[in-house]
Amino acid sequence: MAAERPRVWVSQPLFDDIVGRLDEYFEVEANREVADHAPARIAAALHEADGALITLNEPVGADEVAQASRLRVLANVAVGYNNLDVPALSKAGILVTNTPDVLTETTADLGFALMMAAARRITEAERWLREGQWRGWSFRSLLGADIHGSTLGILGMGRIGQGIARRAGGFGMRVLYHNRSRLPEAVERECGAEYVAFDALLARADHLVLVLPYSAQSRHIVDAAALAKMKPSATLTNIARGGLIDEDALADALAGGRLAAAGLDVFEGEPAVNPRLLALRNVVLTPHIGSGSLATRRAMVSLAVDNLIAALGRGPHAGRPPTPVNADALAR
Ligand code: GLV
Figure 1: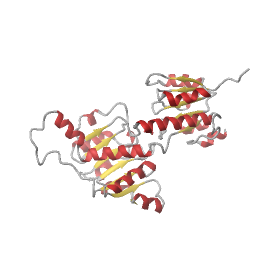
Figure 2 (figure 1 turned 60 degrees about the vertical axis):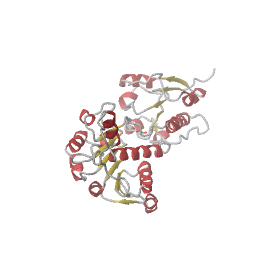
Figure 3 (figure 1 turned 90 degrees about the vertical axis):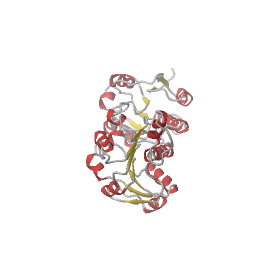
Figure 4 (figure 1 turned 180 degrees about the horizontal axis):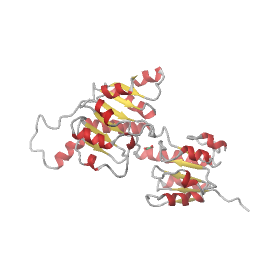
């Protein structure tokens, strides 16, 4: 009798031609509609599965895997994995994989675009034009801040932060960064970036971009006290996770003229957006599209599929998933 094929769950519609590679090895249960799965639905889907391809929309922790006795791997289609309780999953012997590298440049592009849009008031100007308020060219309307020749501050200098720093060189920006640990000198030189303390970063940046991972420690790292240290003429861009910013404090600063503008791709309660931010003109808002080019989203799914196949002991890299997060779980 043929051995039973492993079962995998695909939580959201991704790209059929890429996800279809799973059919060669597994019984696949693929969700056909975009869904906001309740925790009980996630637990039920994982109960019978050996592996799953999941997205940031699916939080998984000890409760969701309590009955999932066969589950060996969760392949997250994202570089960030704050939707997953990695210590609890490691304890349960479940491997987590993510999709680093393939999205670095695309996400850095969006960070730069949002920063520029906030500084030059692009979406605000477009709205003003569409509202029919442009009644004659005016020398003094919608004046923004320069990017070229200004000081860029990068908080979190991983792969995406470094991508933003490299772009800044082309605009003649001075680049300051702060990170948990200082980068090797050669990398600093290649990025043209200077390490400074957190407070100095806040005080000196004309444009501050957040690219650090979200955790209990980094939650609200940009709060009212941090915002008060920034220049009133500065902009703040967030392409990492919404919870890094105290959004009410940000709305206060933007409304009170204590910060010029913000560019936000991520929100603490997404898909809900703080209504105070929605009401402000000096904030550019995008719906978490940092890695959202077609080529990059396809590359992310492809990498996640490779991880899933390899982690379940199939395919050319059997037993060696390319990008594990908690490789120690493999040993269990
Ligand atoms: C997106 O936010 C990601 O972490 O890939």
